[in-house]
Image (cartoon, rainbow, N blue to C red):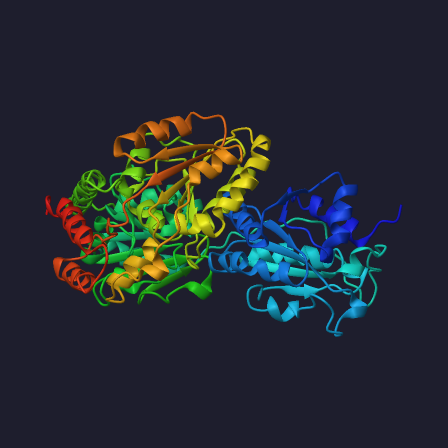
Length: 594
């Protein structure tokens, strides 16, 4: 039997250890699909309901496995549909390889059906590497480079394979002039460390501090033990950017939680009062939530020199692997014997979690969304994987969930796109089929694409050793995050024509397609609903009727800011009475301790 380019492509993917292809078929990749049938579905083709979901599933898999992921689509419209997920990978620094089809070579330039200039289309999103194959001998080098560059740059790459080329007999490169050979598959990332002289300078800055704050992001994931040791030596508190929420457990008394508009009050206080700032593996962009310029001396550690020294006037910039650089730094740090700063941080953290409990118990109509998250804290499986969609679900995920050691969590941190919550969880289940996954999704994202992906969940659930995948829907018939942004940032009341969502029974839809659906419309039902979902032997949709009038007030907001929002609401917002009443009640829970 003739061995085609598509056959060789799949063989090379197997040699790279690729287990899954997240994709959707089409005639632009017919040659690859036919080769998959000949290869007994190895790598396994995971069919989403839409190419954008395939890309999101690949991003979720890569984020939560630490491995590069591959997504696949046909030419033209299929390739276009991948873009949002690939931009999510680009902005969150995730290795994803897109393999897309193209019009046959002989038809290119002839205004053929579905002919799109894919090199131009992917030029930005796959800026690190995008190439189109034209002859068989370009393989395996083309694929090898796409995978290696994706891993090295932590970025999406793309290769374009015309439909006719996929079915051509494969001819390896001749290893002669103008032909490019390729070494065996494999990539081991380098372990870099900043120069000793700069590490010594950093130690001097940190040792001079009396009130040290540490900010960590996803780049500190491999350095959790070292961050903990630095915090113990310096008496620092540790705040976390959203993508770093699972790097250190929230059960540590000095971990102040998330930072920023979706952050906690103790993180705000940590940055407000510190005199020294150490940033590890974070590119957190919102400078208004960092110390005032000139207030703190700062040191930053990041493996990527392009992202260093750009968010805060850092005095020392250490370009290197976070764990190795911290290992070199730790012996040079002096133990801070004055623990007054640490005691203050820990007191603020303790007070915060008491506030979270009281805010979650504020009366609502019918359910306070914070209570959905709060009730999970004591029930959270120690090996759970959490995903959150963009929107109000991200607010409560960031503030109200208290992650213990071992739990993983992620969301669309930089693009903050709607729709990845459910497909991320699907990708997570393929990365870790023996662990339960929980997705928190607003009803806007659920109607956008989450309901369709419930069908994908039903299709593949039997492949997972632990079949639990819980989709918790914040059902409030409102595009809630945008509604609050209109009020607080735009100074405008809710515009119902754009904000109100049609009524849908998500639990009913789940039941209709063979999943378990649980309706929750009373506060006291939340705990039992979590117990039932977590003890189930398969996927569950929690359809939770949440009150859209519970405001996601930033913990650092003062009454003057709340007053401005209230005035905007009173201009004619249809929900103004409930908003003012519940907003004051919620804010009062925080002010009780203050």
